[in-house]
Every structure is written in C-alpha cells, then in structure tokens.
Length: 376
Image (tube, rainbow, N blue to C red):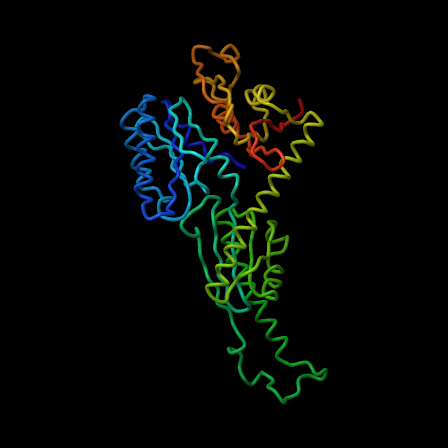
C-alpha cells in the first residue's frame, strides 16, 4: 500500500493529538454516545497536555465528520497547534476508543484500516442498460462517481429490417435479426466500457466487480481486455432488475472485496517469506530499525496487535531515524520516545516505503518486518 496519503500528518513541528473513535450510527441515541466517547477522550488529551485550540479543532472535526452520517464506522482525526492535519473515516469502528498526544501522529490504526479495503468499480448491467459506480479506498456515504449508460434495443430497429414469426430468415434458416441484435449488444457494451475506464481512473480502482446478464458481461469483458485494463474483473451475483437484485449485488461486492484483500495480503506475506530466505527481507523490530534508518525498506510490515508494543527513540531533526537508544541517533539532544509503530511508520512514510499489515495464519500479529530495496 502506498503511504503517501499520510504525509500531511507529518507537516507540523509541534506535538500531534491523534484520536481514533467509534462514530457508529447504529442506534437512535448515537449522537449522545459519540458525544460521551469524545468527552472522555478530550479529558484524557487535556491531562496529557494538549492545548485548548487543538482540542477545539478536534471537537469540530468529530462533530462534523462524514462518518457520523451512516452505518457502523469509525473516525480518525489528527491535529497540532490548533490546526487540523487530517480527518478520515474508518471502515470499521476501532477495537477501543483511543487518544494520544505525542511528538508524532499515531497513525497505525488508520493505516491498517486503509489496507483492508480497495478502491473498486461496481457495474450492474443487462444488454441495454448499465449503472457504473466508483468507490474509493475508504468508506463514504455513497460512490465517488455514479454514471449510467442507456443503449439501443431491438425496439429501435426499423421494423422493415426485422424477421417476424412465420417469415423465413436467410438461406441457412438463421433469423436475420440475430446478427443485428448482437451488434447492438456489443455497441452497448462498448459504451459501458468507456464509463468503466473513466470510473477506474477516477479512484485508481484495483478491481472491477460486475453483476448482471451473462452475455452482456461477456461483451463488456471483450471491451476491457488486457490491452485496455489490467486489473481483475470479478463476476458476482446480483445486478439489474429491481431493489432485491441491486442489494444482492452490493452484498456480493463486499464479500468479493474481502476475498480480494485477503488474497493480496496472502501474496504479500508469501513474498515476504520468500525474500527472507534470500536475505532480501528482515524479521523482527530490532533488525528492521537500521534498514528503515538507511532508507532501504521497500515494504514495511507491521501487525495490528499492539498490546505489548515497546517504545523506541526517534529524532526531531532526522525523521527517518529510529533506534532502541538515543545513542543510535544523529543528535541525542533531539531524541524523544514514542510507540514503536508510530516511529517506524513515520520513517516508512518519509522514505517512500510501502506498507502491509503483517498477519500470522490470517490473524493479527504483534510482530514486524520488512522487505528490502536491495539485499543485505
């Protein structure tokens, strides 16, 4: 996963307040619950030394956050010196509400959440009509883009060119309008394909999920071949044909997304283990730190289990440096302590490394590791 979206969180020289909050709208008293959760975290942040201006900015962002408008979601908010650095909707509510006030943002919960979702395009179609939806790599109230294609149908063909019951077709007995119909379906699919390409470009989609008429899907595949788009096209249940079909399509798409994310994570872990065997990767926090400090990490792998997470040392003057001791930094006088994940993630972001969640047999891990840009 590209970590570029996190860069704005590191644009402050002052300490950063990080909030991860359950903002689900699953009950009629959701507003009150969110208010109480935030009040508790505000008091916690105040006790940690957070200034009032920063607390007020956080409160405004939480009060107006998009995640408060629908469903079971969470919110991640970051602020420093009275300035909002970033506000994000989380796909799932955090396991527990948490807040920190540190020299750097505590961004691992947001990063893990982003890695569990992919930007994608969803298509519902039959041989005449299609709807195309583009969804970003983070939850939202609706699609980032929605478009519709209404193609031609056989009713639009001049009746004089059609063969009706009781009439003969061509010499082979084939109905004369068959070729015409197929040409129309192909032309309709070409129009849908153009909308799909635009939707893919809009959100940087990593998958196209399609439901609907089998023949229409086949025509669409022809128009989105490898020379057009290289991302996978997945066919799922549901499609056009009323509310039930559309709801089934949405449910099928969510299940398909989970499978795609799981497969991508498994491929990343397999690649990591292969590279470990050839000195192209390191396992564990201590071996990973010098690789981060030297800018040699290609992909940083961190687990989401932070129960026994250690604190490490970072530098205010050289942000990619991270060590188990201040003596390992360029200037011990600029050293500070922070949770290991926060420091390692900052180093990865500012050295343009990628990220993946580290899992053990499909379950959250407390370990860390990295694949390298070149062998040890």
